Image 1: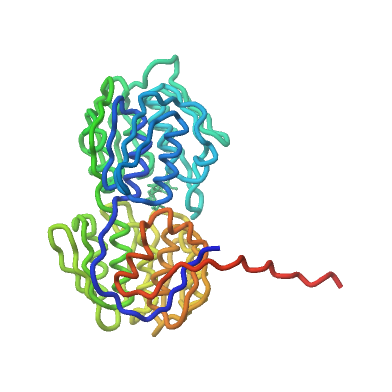
Image 2 (image 1 turned 90 degrees about the vertical axis):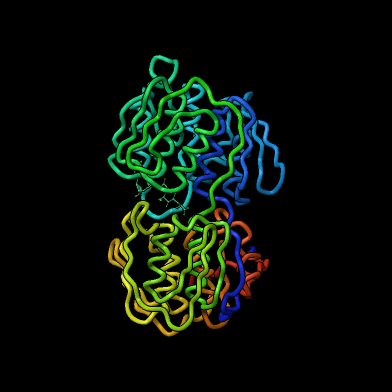
Length: 432
Ligand code: EPZ
């Protein structure tokens, strides 16, 4: 089984280039199903989620051609909505974006229930509410089956989201792009990747305004033409390397970023005593001396991102004093603290609140990633701990981080992939 072996204690120095945004890419690829032409997507992150989604497009009959490691050309003109690779769909949460693109183009959709990281119940009721409003009946079993009532195209509608949901906002926007008439999405999520999806669709001929605000207007068009689009840099990948530099100490230039997207992360790191200098397309992070405690509440954008919660939790665990995290988005996103307690992290969790008492240092141990960002937190903990840390279940991490090992090695970290035999199952003593 492949694991990361990390010898902790090295400060980080040098430059790291950020890849394309995972949470934009995983919506843009399903949306490409609606394009009546050749769609070239640039700055695509090379991560397992994008590979999985491109395979799903191929299973639907699309022609997919990698022009280089980060540029793909897809032609979905001969694609359909039936007989997708449902096994692959089950593996990732973003497969639900095919509901929006299938309904938008074909008036009918069949996908599996989404997979993805497990931190509490992750309902899709707001997605269903949006598709119902656009005129589709939706049946949810192990599959999601949807069909426009009475056939034909979706009809534009007014949708008020009861909960600020990135996925529902994106899914409804995708479907509405080819609906008849105007759609308004109120109480919409405002993440940078939502703006990126809107810009992608508009570059293919859609008419979407207001993305990035809580009210998005979509005037449906007849069809989307081909074109070329470059995905924005990944806000969370950038934040991960910033938090790692804070925890390990050192000086790192994080390049190919949009500093505005990092405002909340930079502000919290500055509160902890980290220097963050902003340039047009990069940020310089410098961390010397002991970090100061900080309190964080995760919120939808532009609040502190929930996807950065585990990473800053590690920095808090070695800060001077006691920090408090309030998880404002998910019910249960603290499982990683159980793993980190093996390394000496002292944390108390009560519902959505975690109190983290800073300790002088962490100590290497064998830990397992339990989801994508928890896995990133395990890596940061190993990098700043004393001794050796083994991180297992690294497939979670590789879903969302391109070349993580190589990027950290280039910053001076002692981290490598080792392939060790599965631990023999613990022998249970024969019944006496
Ligand atoms: C997206 O998940 C991201 N995933 C998540 O990133 C991210 O944590 C999340 O947005 C919040 O920013 C992808 O983009 C593939 P939500 P999503 O719908 O769309 C509740 C990562 O680490 N909700 O904004 O599933 C939901 O339970 C991943 O990259 C409903 O109640 O998140 C949650 O409490 C992890 N009903 C809250 O809303 C719904 O119909 C926010 O969820 C939908 C969501």
